Length: 156
Length: 156
Image 1 (cartoon, rainbow over the protein chains, first blue to last red):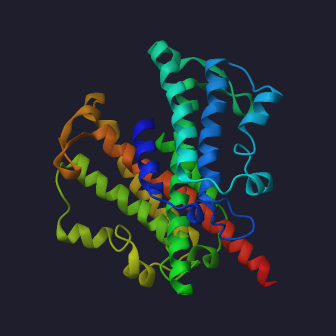
Image 2 (image 1 turned 90 degrees about the vertical axis):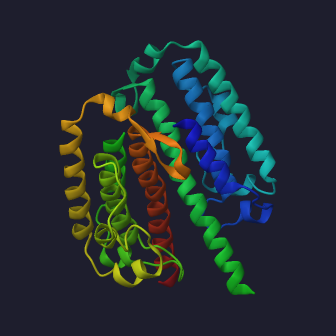
């Protein structure tokens, strides 16, 4: 499911230009580039949460931000990058995830720890959350691309 | 995963007004109401595909459309309904799905049949696709709501 999700994300962003990746449909929008950076940051965060069973240090929070929290800082800082910049980040973090997955037994998926609002959640749920978040943003990426092209057309 | 997905969809549309449900951000847009109708139509379609192992009849295609295909016909016909209208459709079809799921053994999930481009896919994948489509549209619903409120604010 993670692989399928990623493939559809890559399809959705295929050949996007820097202008398309940076497009903000209004002043509170997230650009597609910001959303791609967010996906890599979420995955890095869940590596630490599930592989190391701990919260992020301040240093690690700085590394995954502004992509993780998005908002104004992300809007200021995440722009001007070609598609490859985001794809490399995504691939790098995914390769780490797969490498660690390979060392873990299936039972690890069902290990529980206190999670949102201190309720027990297993690692299967946490990684489901990683890809359900990606699917949600993939839907947004498709919509933002459609809006961008529609506006471009109407300006012509 | 289907239940979690649905819960987040319901959270995303909670208390939306008819105006919000009908909002079209441009002339080729899907409204939130259209997307909710689409979710119910997709689920009904996959009931037939996986529980009855066949394609839809013309009569059934008429029933699931214009929600399934979206586009201009859906834009013309799916509007003016309160939230409850969509929620009832979603609940009705979901109740049918759960009722049938309860009669099926786990092995049913792994039964394969030719699917997209005639390649084998099991029922687990087909129902994953139902909820991955919902997650994608849930992301869009969140974004459309945000755009609507932002535009309303800027008109004030």
